[in-house]
Length: 417
Image (cartoon, rainbow, N blue to C red; front, side, top):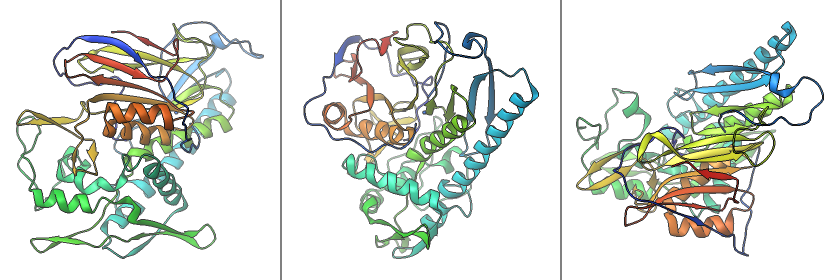
């Protein structure tokens, strides 16, 4: 998932707000694989029946880190923190979470020197790179979702993301320069790239040519089966970016740690877009059931306002958007979400997608994939291939009207715009 913050939006000019389009799941359905779970916040409501302390009187505590994946990571829980042992327990849980995030970054970080991902990307075509069990697990899940979505979710677009100016080196103001770089303007946009690079990097975006091998006993490895392509004498090889799934994977693992420490109420948030919800100690206002959170999705046309609220508990959640990181050229908006089939930023009419499902890693991948597909294909995919997952898509029609397209039941969401 290329990350979209639930409360961050980019102004596009105000259009006419629409009706709600309710998508009814069809007969043909195929389950997309799941793994663990994720999401965000807000208060009020009614407590659930429970032995022990009154849930309404539980205290909230939160831990935050900016140390991993170049973004914010935090965990929040509600519990009885009246004793030293209860406070120490949360410290121990947070330590386990940060240790896990450090291992995850050493595996899946695009920037961290010596990470599995960095070593793989630096390898030439045909080379084999040893990787950790964590990397192998993420790659296996990514491969399954790549196949399930027909390539709409594609970690192998890393070269294209860099070509179009959306990789971390541009955000981090790196000194690294590539032959295909173009000057940036005052708004952070770029001129259009040389078509030779678009085509070469499109050919190098075949994730099926990343082969996972090995075993837990003998160790895992990745083989880069795509041949390098040279332009003006400079060789380029297939590269992958796991940012569209790794943060959700981390949220799943962090939530599992909280649950192992006995926490029932709380949530985990990685990068503001990949989340895992436990239960709410009291249901948020408007929630259709007990212990449910309200997650507020920002209005694509006004970042100060919300477009809708989604309700959930014990679930993963991920939001992707095509409008929050983009630039304009010659009357076209170029988004950070790349379509590997064309080698270009997606031309999707979808502005934002939020997916709730059994695990945040799959939610990450699916929210990005639906953005790439565009509303027509995404609606069909949502209704036929996403059993066990809920999706809410904000779509801009040709008239300028915004439609909410969703497979969620009435009461599981509320329009707030």
